[in-house]
Length: 604
Image (cartoon, rainbow, N blue to C red; front, top):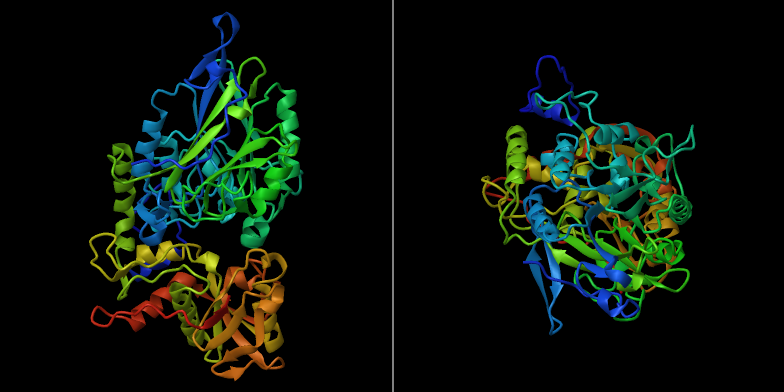
C-alpha cells in the first residue's frame, strides 16, 4: 500500500492488503410567487418594515446530495447532465468534480452574508478508489474545506456500519488500517443528522437529530433523516443493532421540538427522493401543476410532513428537480434534489420574517445550477486530490483489462450488467464447475466503463481504479443452490413486492433469457414460459447453482428468496471476479466488445 503508516500506527488491510500482496451555471424553473409579501420584500437581500427596521432577511441555502466520494470529475454518463433547450431539444453538459464544485459554491456565496450549505446524504459510500480506498477520509476532508454546514445521513453512510459512521463524524484513525498519513484523521467539521436512526438498545438517535443555524438573530433548524427502508438496501452487518423509523413521523416529531425551542424556520434534509417526468435538470417540475411533475416516495412524504417545515432538501434517487408540492395545509412548499456526484447544486432563497421567526414561504425561490468545468479549479481541492492520488496511484493505475468502446450501465438490461454477470459466472465456475448462472443487482454497478482514458493509461485500458469505481462495495461472490421454482420467484421479485413500484431488474449471465412484459403489472410482467437457460425451459423441481454478490445472496434489494438458497460457498470479492474476467478475456490487441444487452426481451 503506498499510504505507508508511521511505525507507531500498525495497520492491517482489507481488499487493499491482498492487492499489495499481489502487486457556466444555468438556471432551472421553480419559484413560488412572491405576491403575498409587501412590494418592498420582493427584491434585495433585506427588506425593511415599519420604522426602517429590517423585517425580511433573505437566507441563501446552497445544497447538494449523493456525492458518493466523487472528488475527481466523474467519467462517461456519470459526469454529464442533460439540459432542455428553449426549442425543446436537449444537450448534454460535462459536469462535476470537487475542484469545480468548490469554485461554484464559493462564487455563489459572494455577497450573501446569510448563507448556509447543506446536503441530503450519501456524501460517502460507493465511492471511487481515490476516496473509497481510504474509507472516505479524503471526501470528509474535502467537505470540510468546502464549508459544508450540515448533512443528513444516507443509506450509504451505513455501508461500513454505525461505528465507522461515528468515526467519520468524530475522527480517529481506522480501527484496522490505522492512519494513512502522519496526521490523525480529524473527522467532519459539520454535523451528520440521523433523526430516524435509533440504537435498538437505547431507543435514541445514534447521532444528532437536528441542528440549528444562527446568525444575527436569524435561526434556521435542520432535521435530517434517511429512508426508512435503509435496511433493505444495505448489508445486514451495516445496520446491525439499528432501527430505522418512519420519515414523516420523525420529521414531525422534531419539528414540534424545534418549535418549542423557538425555532420556527425549519428545513428537512431527507435522504429519499422522487422521479421527475423529465431527466433534464432544468425541467419545469411545476408545469403540469404543483406537485404533478414528480412521482415516487418523496411526493407522499412531502404531502404529509407538517406545514411547520418550510422546505425539503432530498436525494437518493440521483434525480434533479425543483418542485413545489403542497403541504397538508395546501400551501406550496419547495422540494429539491441536485442529481448526484456533485454535478449540480441547488440555490434556494428563504425569506426570513424577523417579526415571526418563520419563512415567508410565498417568497421562496429555488433553482438547480450546473457544476460546469469551464471555471477555475479550486487550488486547495487540487492539492487535496494530488496528495491522495499519490498514495493511491500504485494500486489504482494498474491495468486489469481492455475494452473496444464505452460499456454503459444504463437501461433495463445494460452492457456492463451483462459483463459483470458473465464475470461472476466465470468466477463461480472456478469455485464449482456446476455453477449454472449469475445474477447482479443494478444498484451495485456504480459507474460505466469508459473507453477514453481517465489518466495516462491510454484509451481502452481499464485500470484497477476504474474497476473499483464500478464495484466499490467489496461484496464477496457467493454460490447457492436454488430450485427452479425459487429461481422463477426471484425473477418475479424484480417487479413485485417492494420492487413493484420501482422495478429492480437483475442483470443476468449469458445463457439465461426471458421476456419482460411491461404492459402488465406486478409479477405478471415476467413471462414464465419464456424463461430459458441455455435454450431449455427452467425445471421447477431441478436444482440450479447460482452466483451472486453477498448483498443479493442475503436477500438485499427486495429479493428475499435469494436468502433461502442452500449449500452456500463464499468466494473472493466481486472486483476480483471482474478483474480476473477482464484479464483472461481481453488484451490490447483483442479488447472486449461491449455486450449486446439482448438477454431480456422487453415488451412495452
